[in-house]
Length: 353
Image (tube, one colour):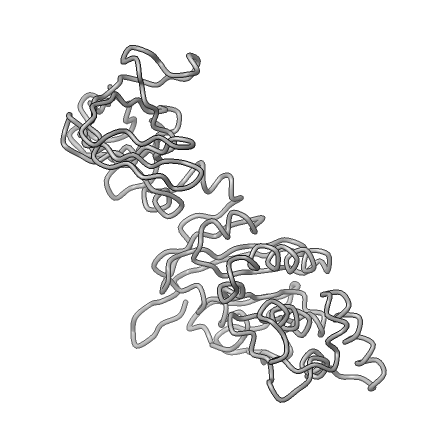
C-alpha cells in the first residue's frame, strides 16, 4: 500500500512476475501503475506490504535493500542517457570489474542490440530508436533478474515503435528476464504481454492472459477499456431482462434490479432482409431491432455506423468491414451476437447472460 497526503494511491496490490515472461501493468493515467514500479525498484517506500525478488525479501516497512543492490533493471520513457558520456560509457556506467571485462561486456551488449558501430558515439548523434536500444543495453548490463519498464516506447515515432518494441522484448525473453511493463494503451498490452494486470484506482481489478482479459472481462469498465461498447440497460423481472433484442437471462439478480448488457460494435450485425438470422445460422442472433442511421464514417479497414434505436432512442455503434456508408436517416435492422454479450448488475461484476 502507498499513500500520498492521506490518499491511498496503491491499495493491496499483489503481483508475481516470472522469468522470460512479460507482464503488463495496464490502466488509465493516475491509477497507481508508476508508483507500483517505483516501490518495486526501491525509489519509493511502501507504507505496508513486502517485496520479494528471487525468493528473497528486499523490502518491508522496516527492512530495506537499496535500489542498486536489488538486481532490478529500469527503463523509462526519457531513456535517461548521460549526454556527456559516449555510448560505451553509458552502457558500462556502474559496472564493476576490471577494465577488460567491462569493455567485453559492453561490446557484447551493443552488438546484441545492433549498435556495435556506435561504441564511441555520443547519445545526441543517435536517433530516438537507437537511444532506446542503448538504454536497453545499459539496463541489461548488470544482468538483472527483473526489468521494470515505465512506458518506454511512448516517446518513439509510431513508424518505429512496433519494430523496436518487438526487438526489445525478444532480447529480454532470450535473456530469461522477468519483465514488468507499465502502459496505458490496451493495444500495446495485448500485443506485448504474456499476462495483463488491469489496474484501476490503485487496485488490480483483473489479472490473466490477454485472451481471457478481453473475452471474460470482470466488469463493464474492463470491457470499455479495450474497445467501444454498446450498453443496453434493463430491469429484471422473473430472472429475465426485456430488451429490444429479446429477453436475456439474469441469474442471481434480485427481482426489480437493473443490469447492463454490454456488447462491442464488431459483434452487432445488420439484418438486410429483416427476417434473416445472419451469415451463420448456428449462432443465436436473437430478435432484430430497428434503428435509423445517425452517422457513418470510414476508418480505413472498417466503417463505423451509429444508429439511433427506435426502442429507446439510444445510440448503437456498429463496425462493418471495408467501406459501408449508408445515408443519414436510413432505417435498418440490427442483430446482436448473444454469445458475445456480457451482463453486469449495476455496480457489480459479470454474470453469464
